[in-house]
Length: 287
Image (cartoon, rainbow, N blue to C red; front, side):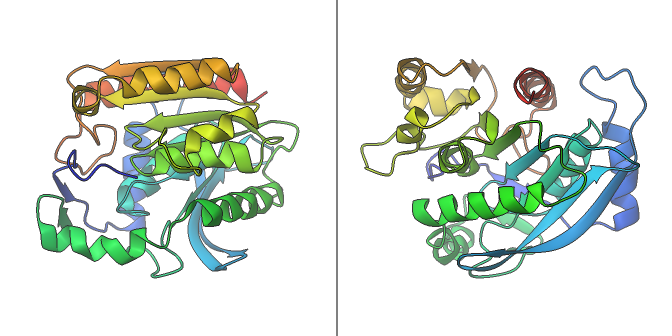
């Protein structure tokens, strides 16, 4: 799924306190052109019964009365951790009910790695091998249905609005599969430096496009594009053939993993551009 030759470098994402998370949310919630004050956000650790067990996840939504569109954030290969918790809080402050699941709940509760993680270190990467094997196309489809059902059961979720889903690295294909698994609910899909969106396998994520009713944003890392310059053209052709509204863009100068804080390749200007594109997509498509 996530290309091992285009890795994210060193990730240093130590645990921080709940109070620190709140302070970070205040600091970041107004970025990306938002003129309004940061909205207080409720954060909950939740457990979701799936066909394969019980998934641990983080749930976020704005404080106060109201209902909002729901979003599933599929993390990258290191799964649910502080950087993605911060992302969930930030998105919720924009007016969404956000679920961030642990990809590897079948094997281990989050956080699945402690302290720093270096993709250049074979021993570090080997720790993820059995966990990654637990994420299958069929299992993802079942998980997606369970997560959306969980979100729809929350009183904060507006069931009149479509659901969004976004994925990072190996989460990109999972976001694609979500739109195919629950096509009647998903209105927007975003992939950020996602790998393996189109393969020659019968379970290729792009084959779900014929079922989907969503609009797509595919943000491609510069070094991913240089390794396979035709990949963006193939996925663009597949999206167009399925008649799905889409934007496929290479972020020049941004390396694989550029959108995720804590990564050695985090690129704040490019990450903020991607965030603004994401918010614009959701504003259009989650109606």
